[in-house]
Length: 315
Image (cartoon, rainbow, N blue to C red; front, side, top):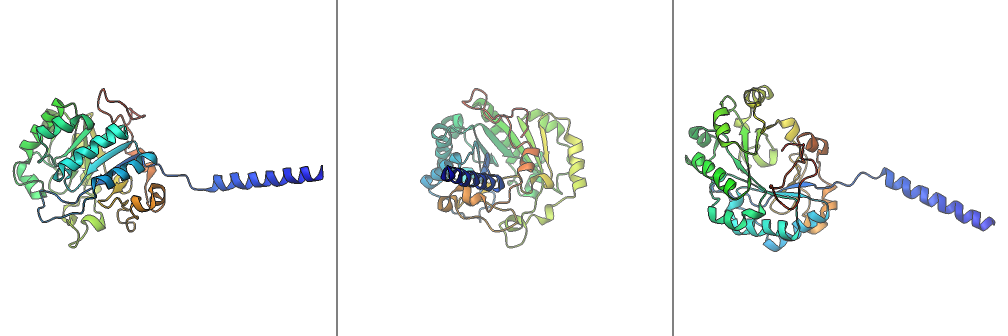
């Protein structure tokens, strides 16, 4: 009787300590949506070279992220269409093998072809195309092409509609375009969404003469960004993101499959080396900001196999 009571008491204490340890552990981060910048190379900046992982390594990374809870992958750069076959095969793997809810691409649009979309378009949910101005001279001043950007941009919007890919416009609002009235032009394009970002300085990426690009001269005040927003917020597809929301609400992987910390500290080790959970322990990710900016939404193409769980949220 005595020994039974002793064993029961010890078991109760052990269970209590176990649940106390579980309760006091920080919650596990789930990388619901990840942005993979697999190359830094861009055809608008021919001086830039970049490491690119092998396709097998990239697939391993995507599989690890899926196991950790990723539901959406966004491929970006640089310019991802500098490696069109790599991009297409990785997108197909993410859809057909991993069955991700959403695969999206951010591109300047200049190298996307009808042939590529005919082959791989069925694996793409969203094509986000950068357009910072509807005045070509302003695009050139900002560094967006050499004078033919708008023509290609408009062609691509039609190609996406033809191939069932949702067309999204990304605009970086800076000192050269914050006063521009884009209402008529964006109305003509009628994108699925129009994401407008206040130009953001990330010290290790665009914040000095030593980084790949120095964007300090492009910065604007919060008031100037709000002026742009007030001019365009009547459109149902308009989604603004100021610096306060943007700063750390994105999970970014670089070309080495390391999570970036956006000026807070150094990148993590590669997820291929330490795994996703371990890498995420060293990432500052503003999950509240992620939800505040509508990080989850109905992100699958119409008729696709899966949809995001929060269709009321915008992107």
